[in-house]
Length: 439
Image (cartoon, rainbow, N blue to C red; front, side, top):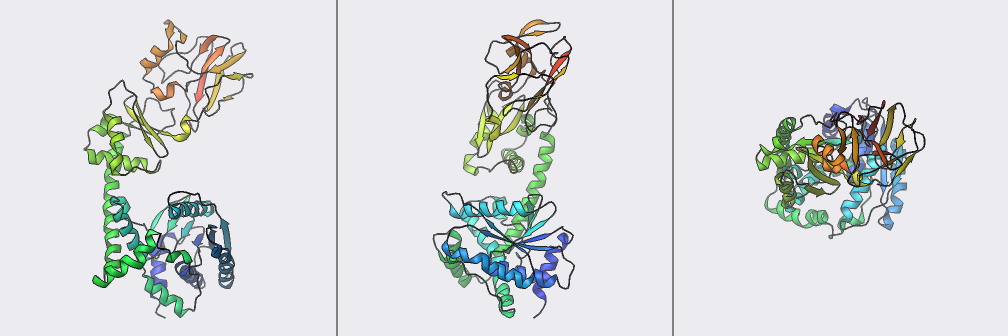
């Protein structure tokens, strides 16, 4: 056999030859069987990272119960350790997506820092992905289809066979007398990919024989275009990512004025890039929420709800609030030992720095009408003090207030806007997941 396929594989994996380990996603099908056999064979003549196989059992069909044993036998013959992982697929509208989510969650679990997880997707898979997403109206990022490499947990997800055709994999498997699993679900036309593979692509290739390589090449061009859009987004975000006056607040934020100077298309491009690691994004028909957030009056408190949280506006900035941000209790918390930090349920930690005031002390949250004694200014309405500080409205309800009985003793100062006490102590609040606190 000509060593073309092994050479292609080594070339594709060259940047990751020094990874601590290579994990092979091994379903037992043709693609992953060829990938595993190629790597195990190359490991006898090349210096490669340690190889490990991972089989994910979704539990969706009875036939799959026999697959781990088949995979174990293959791995035993090749001398590659196998880990079988059983996952629970969440019921939902798309079984394909739910199974994929469960599978990749398992992959994240096994992929350590700097390690690589390798999957067997090939050129036909790439072409199918592009056409499938095109039919769903995807944008440039979606149409760039599957990248050869992307981050996964602390390592990488690699698809080293994207430049290889299904025919090449079949030829290799026959020449090496490999045995693989034929998944019965691959013939189920209820799944969109199967319909494309069995009905649409045969008609396309009958008329245009170069359909698959042409679509795969188009995906490469679109991936390059997406890279340029990402470069533009980073340039625009560098301007909008100005320092916040509330550096202690552990929330991503951007300056609204800088975003407003961009065209609508560049605003969406920058926000997509910024939000991608934070939440699933809406399609192009559901960006009216951004316009409402951006264009609301200065004294309004608009928000844009997204899949995994929401964007709010305050202090001339937009702030990303993950879903967990709203999951905290407004209940009064007693502080029996003020010498030690107080953990606030869902709201970080509170410390007393300096001479501890006499107790008993409790921590409450705003109800309205609170009056605070401010050194040099006398008694001041807390609401007015917060307005002066410019503290975003969504933080004010979480601001911990220190009480002794019914007396408000102190509040954490906001960005140095006012001194809290002249009695030799300060409140230091560190919101959850925050490295810097509020004193």
